[in-house]
Image (cartoon, rainbow, N blue to C red; front, side):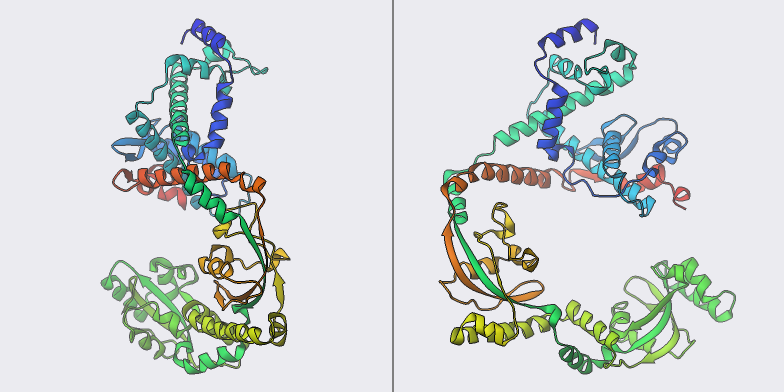
Length: 518
Protein backbone atom coordinates (compact mmCIF):
# COMPACT_ATOMS: atom_id res chain seq x y z
CA UNK A 1 0.00 0.00 0.00
CA UNK A 2 1.53 3.31 -1.06
CA UNK A 3 2.18 6.03 1.47
CA UNK A 4 -0.14 8.44 -0.28
CA UNK A 5 -2.96 5.90 0.10
CA UNK A 6 -2.29 5.80 3.82
CA UNK A 7 -2.27 9.60 4.00
CA UNK A 8 -5.56 9.66 2.14
CA UNK A 9 -6.97 7.16 4.56
CA UNK A 10 -5.72 9.27 7.48
CA UNK A 11 -7.68 12.23 6.15
CA UNK A 12 -10.83 10.11 5.97
CA UNK A 13 -10.19 8.61 9.38
CA UNK A 14 -12.71 9.78 11.96
CA UNK A 15 -12.02 7.23 14.67
CA UNK A 16 -9.48 4.80 16.03
CA UNK A 17 -10.45 1.66 14.12
CA UNK A 18 -8.28 -0.71 16.14
CA UNK A 19 -9.86 0.62 19.30
CA UNK A 20 -13.29 0.06 17.79
CA UNK A 21 -12.37 -3.49 16.84
CA UNK A 22 -11.07 -4.15 20.35
CA UNK A 23 -14.35 -2.86 21.83
CA UNK A 24 -16.27 -5.18 19.54
CA UNK A 25 -13.94 -7.98 20.59
CA UNK A 26 -15.03 -7.41 24.16
CA UNK A 27 -18.69 -7.05 23.17
CA UNK A 28 -18.71 -10.20 21.04
CA UNK A 29 -16.30 -12.71 22.58
CA UNK A 30 -18.08 -15.39 20.55
CA UNK A 31 -16.09 -14.39 17.49
CA UNK A 32 -12.77 -14.76 19.25
CA UNK A 33 -13.39 -18.09 20.97
CA UNK A 34 -16.57 -19.26 22.63
CA UNK A 35 -15.12 -20.74 25.78
CA UNK A 36 -11.44 -20.11 26.55
CA UNK A 37 -10.25 -22.86 28.86
CA UNK A 38 -9.07 -21.40 32.16
CA UNK A 39 -5.63 -22.97 32.33
CA UNK A 40 -2.20 -22.37 33.70
CA UNK A 41 0.26 -21.59 30.92
CA UNK A 42 3.96 -21.46 31.58
CA UNK A 43 6.95 -20.73 29.43
CA UNK A 44 6.97 -24.19 27.82
CA UNK A 45 4.18 -23.07 25.50
CA UNK A 46 6.49 -20.49 23.96
CA UNK A 47 9.63 -22.61 24.08
CA UNK A 48 7.92 -25.24 21.94
CA UNK A 49 7.44 -22.72 19.14
CA UNK A 50 10.80 -21.04 19.53
CA UNK A 51 13.91 -21.54 17.41
CA UNK A 52 15.03 -25.15 17.67
CA UNK A 53 11.91 -26.20 19.56
CA UNK A 54 9.91 -29.30 18.63
CA UNK A 55 7.43 -27.27 16.61
CA UNK A 56 10.09 -25.59 14.51
CA UNK A 57 11.79 -28.93 13.88
CA UNK A 58 8.47 -30.58 12.98
CA UNK A 59 7.62 -27.82 10.55
CA UNK A 60 10.68 -28.53 8.52
CA UNK A 61 11.91 -24.97 8.48
CA UNK A 62 8.67 -23.00 8.35
CA UNK A 63 6.10 -25.10 6.51
CA UNK A 64 2.47 -24.78 7.57
CA UNK A 65 0.91 -27.41 9.80
CA UNK A 66 -2.67 -28.47 9.10
CA UNK A 67 -4.54 -29.56 12.24
CA UNK A 68 -7.88 -30.26 10.56
CA UNK A 69 -10.43 -28.55 8.37
CA UNK A 70 -13.76 -26.77 8.47
CA UNK A 71 -16.04 -27.40 5.49
CA UNK A 72 -12.99 -28.26 3.40
CA UNK A 73 -10.95 -25.21 4.51
CA UNK A 74 -7.70 -26.11 6.27
CA UNK A 75 -7.21 -25.10 9.89
CA UNK A 76 -3.55 -24.20 9.64
CA UNK A 77 -0.88 -23.06 12.06
CA UNK A 78 1.87 -20.79 10.79
CA UNK A 79 3.84 -18.05 12.57
CA UNK A 80 1.91 -14.78 12.60
CA UNK A 81 -1.37 -16.37 11.55
CA UNK A 82 -4.67 -16.35 13.42
CA UNK A 83 -3.96 -19.74 14.99
CA UNK A 84 -0.59 -18.53 16.30
CA UNK A 85 -2.07 -15.29 17.61
CA UNK A 86 -4.82 -17.18 19.44
CA UNK A 87 -2.28 -19.51 21.01
CA UNK A 88 -0.22 -16.55 22.26
CA UNK A 89 -3.31 -14.70 23.47
CA UNK A 90 -4.56 -17.64 25.55
CA UNK A 91 -1.08 -18.33 26.90
CA UNK A 92 -0.48 -14.71 27.88
CA UNK A 93 -3.86 -14.52 29.57
CA UNK A 94 -2.94 -17.15 32.13
CA UNK A 95 0.84 -17.42 32.21
CA UNK A 96 1.03 -15.54 35.52
CA UNK A 97 -1.13 -18.14 37.27
CA UNK A 98 0.27 -20.91 39.45
CA UNK A 99 2.62 -23.13 37.46
CA UNK A 100 2.21 -26.29 39.56
CA UNK A 101 0.64 -28.31 36.75
CA UNK A 102 1.70 -30.83 34.14
CA UNK A 103 3.48 -28.74 31.51
CA UNK A 104 2.67 -31.10 28.63
CA UNK A 105 -1.04 -31.20 29.47
CA UNK A 106 -1.14 -27.42 29.84
CA UNK A 107 0.61 -26.81 26.53
CA UNK A 108 -1.67 -29.25 24.75
CA UNK A 109 -4.79 -27.64 26.23
CA UNK A 110 -3.67 -24.17 25.15
CA UNK A 111 -2.96 -25.32 21.62
CA UNK A 112 -6.26 -27.18 21.40
CA UNK A 113 -8.25 -24.14 22.50
CA UNK A 114 -6.42 -22.09 19.85
CA UNK A 115 -7.34 -24.77 17.31
CA UNK A 116 -11.03 -24.61 18.26
CA UNK A 117 -10.99 -20.80 18.21
CA UNK A 118 -9.47 -20.87 14.74
CA UNK A 119 -12.09 -23.33 13.54
CA UNK A 120 -14.82 -21.03 14.85
CA UNK A 121 -13.12 -18.06 13.21
CA UNK A 122 -13.14 -19.86 9.86
CA UNK A 123 -16.79 -20.82 10.42
CA UNK A 124 -17.78 -17.19 10.94
CA UNK A 125 -15.81 -16.06 7.89
CA UNK A 126 -17.53 -18.75 5.85
CA UNK A 127 -20.92 -17.51 7.00
CA UNK A 128 -19.91 -13.92 6.29
CA UNK A 129 -18.79 -14.87 2.79
CA UNK A 130 -22.02 -16.72 2.10
CA UNK A 131 -23.94 -13.71 3.37
CA UNK A 132 -22.14 -11.40 0.94
CA UNK A 133 -20.24 -9.42 3.60
CA UNK A 134 -17.34 -7.52 2.06
CA UNK A 135 -14.85 -5.00 3.41
CA UNK A 136 -13.48 -2.39 1.01
CA UNK A 137 -9.79 -1.69 0.50
CA UNK A 138 -10.34 1.83 1.82
CA UNK A 139 -11.81 0.44 5.05
CA UNK A 140 -8.77 -1.81 5.54
CA UNK A 141 -6.46 1.15 4.85
CA UNK A 142 -8.26 3.16 7.49
CA UNK A 143 -8.01 0.34 10.02
CA UNK A 144 -4.27 -0.08 9.44
CA UNK A 145 -3.73 3.53 10.49
CA UNK A 146 -4.52 2.40 14.03
CA UNK A 147 -2.69 -0.94 13.97
CA UNK A 148 -0.43 -0.98 17.08
CA UNK A 149 2.69 -2.29 15.32
CA UNK A 150 2.61 0.71 12.97
CA UNK A 151 2.21 3.42 15.61
CA UNK A 152 4.94 5.62 17.06
CA UNK A 153 5.42 6.46 20.73
CA UNK A 154 2.74 9.15 20.48
CA UNK A 155 0.16 6.74 19.10
CA UNK A 156 0.39 8.20 15.60
CA UNK A 157 0.78 6.19 12.41
CA UNK A 158 4.47 5.82 11.53
CA UNK A 159 5.29 5.48 7.84
CA UNK A 160 8.81 4.51 8.93
CA UNK A 161 7.57 1.51 10.90
CA UNK A 162 5.20 0.58 8.13
CA UNK A 163 7.96 0.73 5.52
CA UNK A 164 10.25 -1.37 7.73
CA UNK A 165 7.76 -4.24 7.86
CA UNK A 166 8.31 -7.05 5.37
CA UNK A 167 5.93 -7.56 2.49
CA UNK A 168 4.83 -10.87 4.01
CA UNK A 169 4.08 -9.23 7.37
CA UNK A 170 2.10 -6.48 5.68
CA UNK A 171 0.08 -9.02 3.70
CA UNK A 172 -0.65 -11.08 6.83
CA UNK A 173 -1.63 -8.01 8.83
CA UNK A 174 -3.88 -6.78 6.08
CA UNK A 175 -5.58 -10.15 5.73
CA UNK A 176 -6.11 -10.55 9.49
CA UNK A 177 -7.44 -7.00 9.72
CA UNK A 178 -9.92 -7.70 6.94
CA UNK A 179 -11.05 -10.92 8.61
CA UNK A 180 -11.48 -9.14 11.93
CA UNK A 181 -13.64 -6.48 10.31
CA UNK A 182 -15.74 -9.06 8.47
CA UNK A 183 -16.39 -11.06 11.64
CA UNK A 184 -17.38 -7.87 13.46
CA UNK A 185 -19.82 -6.94 10.70
CA UNK A 186 -21.29 -10.43 10.97
CA UNK A 187 -21.61 -10.06 14.75
CA UNK A 188 -23.23 -6.65 14.46
CA UNK A 189 -25.72 -7.92 11.88
CA UNK A 190 -26.46 -10.91 14.09
CA UNK A 191 -27.02 -8.81 17.19
CA UNK A 192 -29.10 -6.09 15.55
CA UNK A 193 -31.19 -8.77 13.85
CA UNK A 194 -32.32 -10.27 17.14
CA UNK A 195 -35.97 -9.46 17.76
CA UNK A 196 -37.98 -9.98 20.92
CA UNK A 197 -41.77 -9.88 20.89
CA UNK A 198 -43.69 -7.52 23.15
CA UNK A 199 -45.75 -10.40 24.56
CA UNK A 200 -42.60 -12.29 25.43
CA UNK A 201 -41.16 -9.24 27.17
CA UNK A 202 -44.35 -8.65 29.12
CA UNK A 203 -44.42 -12.27 30.23
CA UNK A 204 -40.88 -12.03 31.57
CA UNK A 205 -41.66 -8.78 33.35
CA UNK A 206 -44.76 -10.32 34.89
CA UNK A 207 -42.64 -13.20 36.14
CA UNK A 208 -40.08 -10.84 37.67
CA UNK A 209 -42.56 -8.42 39.26
CA UNK A 210 -43.92 -10.42 42.24
CA UNK A 211 -41.23 -11.05 44.87
CA UNK A 212 -41.55 -13.26 47.93
CA UNK A 213 -39.60 -13.90 51.10
CA UNK A 214 -39.65 -17.13 53.07
CA UNK A 215 -38.46 -18.87 56.19
CA UNK A 216 -37.10 -22.37 55.76
CA UNK A 217 -35.67 -25.27 57.70
CA UNK A 218 -33.00 -27.43 56.10
CA UNK A 219 -32.18 -31.10 56.61
CA UNK A 220 -28.75 -31.61 55.02
CA UNK A 221 -27.69 -35.05 53.84
CA UNK A 222 -24.40 -34.62 55.71
CA UNK A 223 -26.40 -35.29 58.87
CA UNK A 224 -27.33 -38.82 57.84
CA UNK A 225 -27.13 -40.75 61.13
CA UNK A 226 -24.22 -43.09 61.82
CA UNK A 227 -26.68 -45.74 63.00
CA UNK A 228 -28.38 -45.75 59.58
CA UNK A 229 -24.97 -46.15 57.93
CA UNK A 230 -24.10 -49.07 60.25
CA UNK A 231 -27.43 -50.76 59.54
CA UNK A 232 -26.81 -50.50 55.79
CA UNK A 233 -23.30 -51.92 56.14
CA UNK A 234 -24.48 -54.87 58.23
CA UNK A 235 -27.21 -55.62 55.67
CA UNK A 236 -24.69 -55.53 52.80
CA UNK A 237 -21.58 -57.10 54.34
CA UNK A 238 -20.35 -58.73 51.14
CA UNK A 239 -19.87 -55.36 49.46
CA UNK A 240 -17.49 -54.19 52.16
CA UNK A 241 -15.16 -57.16 52.42
CA UNK A 242 -11.72 -55.77 51.60
CA UNK A 243 -8.44 -57.14 50.31
CA UNK A 244 -4.96 -55.70 49.75
CA UNK A 245 -3.89 -56.30 46.16
CA UNK A 246 -1.61 -55.25 43.35
CA UNK A 247 -2.50 -55.56 39.67
CA UNK A 248 -1.19 -55.36 36.14
CA UNK A 249 -3.66 -54.15 33.52
CA UNK A 250 -2.75 -55.21 29.98
CA UNK A 251 -4.61 -53.70 27.02
CA UNK A 252 -2.63 -55.27 24.16
CA UNK A 253 -4.24 -58.72 24.47
CA UNK A 254 -4.63 -61.90 26.50
CA UNK A 255 -1.51 -63.51 25.04
CA UNK A 256 0.78 -60.78 26.31
CA UNK A 257 -0.93 -60.89 29.70
CA UNK A 258 -0.20 -64.65 29.86
CA UNK A 259 3.45 -64.02 28.94
CA UNK A 260 3.73 -61.45 31.75
CA UNK A 261 2.15 -63.85 34.25
CA UNK A 262 4.60 -66.58 33.19
CA UNK A 263 7.57 -64.25 33.79
CA UNK A 264 6.29 -63.58 37.29
CA UNK A 265 5.90 -67.30 38.04
CA UNK A 266 9.31 -68.10 36.48
CA UNK A 267 10.81 -65.26 38.53
CA UNK A 268 12.57 -63.92 35.44
CA UNK A 269 11.20 -60.51 36.44
CA UNK A 270 9.38 -59.12 39.46
CA UNK A 271 5.72 -58.22 39.59
CA UNK A 272 6.66 -54.60 40.36
CA UNK A 273 9.03 -54.28 37.40
CA UNK A 274 6.49 -55.76 34.99
CA UNK A 275 3.73 -53.51 36.34
CA UNK A 276 5.86 -50.41 35.76
CA UNK A 277 6.70 -51.58 32.23
CA UNK A 278 3.40 -52.98 30.97
CA UNK A 279 0.49 -51.92 33.16
CA UNK A 280 -1.80 -49.28 31.69
CA UNK A 281 -3.38 -47.70 34.75
CA UNK A 282 -2.69 -45.21 37.52
CA UNK A 283 -1.06 -47.85 39.73
CA UNK A 284 1.76 -48.70 37.29
CA UNK A 285 4.23 -46.20 38.76
CA UNK A 286 3.70 -47.80 42.19
CA UNK A 287 4.53 -51.26 40.91
CA UNK A 288 0.83 -52.09 40.61
CA UNK A 289 0.10 -51.51 44.31
CA UNK A 290 -3.62 -50.73 44.73
CA UNK A 291 -3.67 -50.90 48.53
CA UNK A 292 -6.80 -52.09 50.33
CA UNK A 293 -9.85 -52.38 48.08
CA UNK A 294 -13.48 -53.12 48.88
CA UNK A 295 -15.36 -55.86 47.06
CA UNK A 296 -17.65 -53.39 45.29
CA UNK A 297 -14.61 -51.49 44.03
CA UNK A 298 -12.86 -54.59 42.65
CA UNK A 299 -16.14 -55.76 41.10
CA UNK A 300 -16.19 -52.56 39.02
CA UNK A 301 -13.15 -53.90 37.11
CA UNK A 302 -15.24 -56.72 35.63
CA UNK A 303 -18.40 -57.15 33.61
CA UNK A 304 -19.05 -60.67 34.94
CA UNK A 305 -20.31 -60.45 38.52
CA UNK A 306 -18.60 -63.61 39.78
CA UNK A 307 -15.10 -62.72 38.51
CA UNK A 308 -14.27 -60.57 41.54
CA UNK A 309 -14.87 -63.59 43.77
CA UNK A 310 -11.76 -65.21 42.23
CA UNK A 311 -9.70 -62.27 43.45
CA UNK A 312 -11.10 -62.40 46.98
CA UNK A 313 -10.39 -66.14 47.18
CA UNK A 314 -6.63 -65.56 46.76
CA UNK A 315 -4.20 -66.29 49.58
CA UNK A 316 -1.38 -63.93 50.56
CA UNK A 317 1.31 -63.88 47.86
CA UNK A 318 -0.87 -65.82 45.41
CA UNK A 319 -1.26 -64.74 41.79
CA UNK A 320 -4.59 -64.79 39.97
CA UNK A 321 -5.20 -66.21 36.54
CA UNK A 322 -5.34 -63.73 33.68
CA UNK A 323 -8.84 -62.29 34.14
CA UNK A 324 -10.94 -60.57 31.48
CA UNK A 325 -11.64 -57.05 32.73
CA UNK A 326 -13.80 -54.22 31.49
CA UNK A 327 -10.81 -52.38 30.01
CA UNK A 328 -8.35 -55.17 29.32
CA UNK A 329 -6.73 -58.26 30.83
CA UNK A 330 -5.80 -58.17 34.52
CA UNK A 331 -3.36 -60.08 36.72
CA UNK A 332 -3.91 -59.67 40.46
CA UNK A 333 -1.53 -60.44 43.28
CA UNK A 334 -2.89 -60.82 46.79
CA UNK A 335 -0.75 -58.80 49.20
CA UNK A 336 -2.96 -59.44 52.23
CA UNK A 337 -5.94 -61.77 52.44
CA UNK A 338 -9.57 -60.62 52.44
CA UNK A 339 -11.06 -59.32 55.70
CA UNK A 340 -14.64 -58.72 56.77
CA UNK A 341 -15.52 -55.08 57.45
CA UNK A 342 -15.55 -53.82 61.04
CA UNK A 343 -18.67 -51.68 61.29
CA UNK A 344 -17.61 -50.28 64.66
CA UNK A 345 -14.63 -48.60 62.98
CA UNK A 346 -15.23 -44.92 62.16
CA UNK A 347 -13.09 -45.08 59.01
CA UNK A 348 -15.08 -48.04 57.68
CA UNK A 349 -18.36 -46.28 58.45
CA UNK A 350 -17.13 -43.21 56.56
CA UNK A 351 -16.40 -45.45 53.56
CA UNK A 352 -19.85 -47.02 53.80
CA UNK A 353 -21.46 -43.58 53.92
CA UNK A 354 -19.45 -42.50 50.87
CA UNK A 355 -20.70 -45.62 49.07
CA UNK A 356 -24.33 -44.89 49.99
CA UNK A 357 -23.95 -41.27 48.89
CA UNK A 358 -22.55 -42.31 45.50
CA UNK A 359 -24.55 -45.45 44.72
CA UNK A 360 -27.59 -45.48 47.01
CA UNK A 361 -28.39 -41.80 47.46
CA UNK A 362 -32.10 -42.55 47.27
CA UNK A 363 -31.90 -44.09 50.74
CA UNK A 364 -30.60 -40.82 52.17
CA UNK A 365 -33.23 -38.85 50.25
CA UNK A 366 -36.00 -41.12 51.53
CA UNK A 367 -34.79 -40.77 55.10
CA UNK A 368 -34.77 -36.96 55.06
CA UNK A 369 -37.96 -36.72 53.02
CA UNK A 370 -39.69 -38.62 55.79
CA UNK A 371 -38.19 -36.30 58.44
CA UNK A 372 -39.20 -33.23 56.43
CA UNK A 373 -42.70 -34.65 56.00
CA UNK A 374 -42.96 -34.99 59.77
CA UNK A 375 -41.97 -31.33 60.09
CA UNK A 376 -44.61 -30.22 57.55
CA UNK A 377 -47.36 -32.21 59.24
CA UNK A 378 -46.40 -31.06 62.74
CA UNK A 379 -46.14 -27.41 61.58
CA UNK A 380 -49.76 -27.55 60.41
CA UNK A 381 -50.73 -28.43 63.98
CA UNK A 382 -48.51 -26.28 66.22
CA UNK A 383 -46.86 -23.77 63.87
CA UNK A 384 -43.70 -23.82 61.81
CA UNK A 385 -41.32 -22.23 64.32
CA UNK A 386 -42.31 -24.51 67.21
CA UNK A 387 -42.30 -27.66 65.08
CA UNK A 388 -38.80 -26.87 63.80
CA UNK A 389 -37.56 -26.12 67.32
CA UNK A 390 -38.97 -29.41 68.63
CA UNK A 391 -36.98 -31.26 65.94
CA UNK A 392 -33.80 -29.29 66.70
CA UNK A 393 -33.87 -27.45 63.35
CA UNK A 394 -32.82 -23.85 62.72
CA UNK A 395 -35.18 -21.43 60.93
CA UNK A 396 -33.45 -19.31 58.27
CA UNK A 397 -35.07 -16.29 56.54
CA UNK A 398 -34.59 -15.32 52.90
CA UNK A 399 -34.46 -11.98 51.19
CA UNK A 400 -37.16 -11.06 48.64
CA UNK A 401 -36.73 -12.72 45.23
CA UNK A 402 -38.92 -13.43 42.16
CA UNK A 403 -39.35 -16.65 40.19
CA UNK A 404 -35.68 -16.61 39.32
CA UNK A 405 -34.56 -19.97 37.96
CA UNK A 406 -30.74 -20.11 37.74
CA UNK A 407 -30.69 -16.54 39.13
CA UNK A 408 -31.14 -15.13 35.64
CA UNK A 409 -32.41 -11.90 37.21
CA UNK A 410 -29.08 -10.87 38.69
CA UNK A 411 -30.61 -7.89 40.51
CA UNK A 412 -32.66 -10.17 42.81
CA UNK A 413 -30.90 -13.51 43.40
CA UNK A 414 -32.24 -16.21 45.68
CA UNK A 415 -30.40 -15.45 48.91
CA UNK A 416 -30.77 -16.44 52.56
CA UNK A 417 -29.77 -14.33 55.54
CA UNK A 418 -26.91 -14.89 56.11
CA UNK A 419 -25.89 -15.70 52.55
CA UNK A 420 -23.86 -18.70 53.76
CA UNK A 421 -27.15 -20.45 54.57
CA UNK A 422 -28.45 -20.19 50.99
CA UNK A 423 -29.19 -23.69 49.61
CA UNK A 424 -26.67 -23.90 46.78
CA UNK A 425 -28.85 -25.91 44.39
CA UNK A 426 -32.17 -24.19 45.09
CA UNK A 427 -31.71 -21.59 42.35
CA UNK A 428 -31.47 -24.32 39.70
CA UNK A 429 -34.48 -26.30 40.95
CA UNK A 430 -37.78 -25.83 39.13
CA UNK A 431 -39.50 -27.77 41.88
CA UNK A 432 -38.22 -25.29 44.47
CA UNK A 433 -39.73 -22.27 42.68
CA UNK A 434 -42.94 -24.12 41.83
CA UNK A 435 -43.57 -25.06 45.45
CA UNK A 436 -42.37 -21.72 46.84
CA UNK A 437 -44.61 -19.61 44.61
CA UNK A 438 -47.61 -21.89 45.09
CA UNK A 439 -47.81 -21.24 48.84
CA UNK A 440 -50.42 -19.07 50.49
CA UNK A 441 -49.62 -16.62 53.30
CA UNK A 442 -48.05 -18.44 56.29
CA UNK A 443 -48.56 -21.76 54.52
CA UNK A 444 -45.88 -24.45 54.97
CA UNK A 445 -44.64 -26.44 51.99
CA UNK A 446 -44.26 -30.20 51.69
CA UNK A 447 -40.62 -31.39 51.51
CA UNK A 448 -38.58 -29.86 48.69
CA UNK A 449 -35.75 -32.16 47.57
CA UNK A 450 -32.52 -30.46 46.50
CA UNK A 451 -29.15 -31.95 45.55
CA UNK A 452 -27.75 -32.39 49.04
CA UNK A 453 -30.57 -31.54 51.39
CA UNK A 454 -34.34 -31.37 51.87
CA UNK A 455 -35.97 -28.07 52.85
CA UNK A 456 -39.39 -27.06 54.15
CA UNK A 457 -40.57 -23.51 53.35
CA UNK A 458 -43.03 -21.06 54.88
CA UNK A 459 -44.16 -17.96 52.97
CA UNK A 460 -43.61 -14.84 55.08
CA UNK A 461 -44.26 -11.87 52.76
CA UNK A 462 -44.91 -10.77 49.18
CA UNK A 463 -44.36 -7.48 47.35
CA UNK A 464 -44.34 -6.05 43.82
CA UNK A 465 -41.14 -4.96 42.09
CA UNK A 466 -41.18 -1.19 41.33
CA UNK A 467 -41.96 -0.16 37.74
CA UNK A 468 -38.63 1.66 37.50
CA UNK A 469 -36.81 -1.63 38.04
CA UNK A 470 -39.16 -3.68 35.85
CA UNK A 471 -38.65 -1.30 32.92
CA UNK A 472 -34.91 -1.93 33.04
CA UNK A 473 -35.63 -5.49 31.96
CA UNK A 474 -36.08 -4.42 28.33
CA UNK A 475 -32.32 -4.06 27.82
CA UNK A 476 -31.67 -7.24 29.80
CA UNK A 477 -34.08 -9.20 27.60
CA UNK A 478 -32.30 -7.97 24.46
CA UNK A 479 -28.94 -8.98 25.94
CA UNK A 480 -30.12 -12.49 26.85
CA UNK A 481 -31.68 -12.93 23.43
CA UNK A 482 -28.36 -11.99 21.84
CA UNK A 483 -26.45 -14.44 24.03
CA UNK A 484 -28.91 -17.17 23.12
CA UNK A 485 -28.40 -16.50 19.42
CA UNK A 486 -24.62 -16.78 19.86
CA UNK A 487 -24.93 -20.08 21.70
CA UNK A 488 -27.32 -21.48 19.12
CA UNK A 489 -25.04 -20.37 16.29
CA UNK A 490 -22.07 -22.09 17.91
CA UNK A 491 -24.00 -25.34 18.16
CA UNK A 492 -25.13 -25.10 14.55
CA UNK A 493 -21.71 -24.26 13.11
CA UNK A 494 -19.43 -26.59 15.08
CA UNK A 495 -20.87 -29.97 14.13
CA UNK A 496 -18.89 -33.14 13.25
CA UNK A 497 -20.03 -33.08 9.63
CA UNK A 498 -18.42 -29.65 9.21
CA UNK A 499 -15.36 -29.92 11.46
CA UNK A 500 -12.56 -32.42 10.86
CA UNK A 501 -10.46 -32.61 14.03
CA UNK A 502 -6.97 -34.09 13.58
CA UNK A 503 -5.54 -32.13 16.46
CA UNK A 504 -4.25 -34.92 18.73
CA UNK A 505 -2.20 -36.79 16.16
CA UNK A 506 -0.86 -33.55 14.64
CA UNK A 507 0.08 -32.13 18.04
CA UNK A 508 1.84 -35.35 19.03
CA UNK A 509 3.72 -35.48 15.76
CA UNK A 510 4.84 -31.88 15.28
CA UNK A 511 4.33 -29.79 18.42
CA UNK A 512 5.11 -32.20 21.25
CA UNK A 513 6.64 -35.41 19.89
CA UNK A 514 6.86 -38.39 22.23
CA UNK A 515 10.56 -37.82 22.95
CA UNK A 516 9.79 -34.23 23.96
CA UNK A 517 7.18 -35.40 26.48
CA UNK A 518 9.61 -37.65 28.32
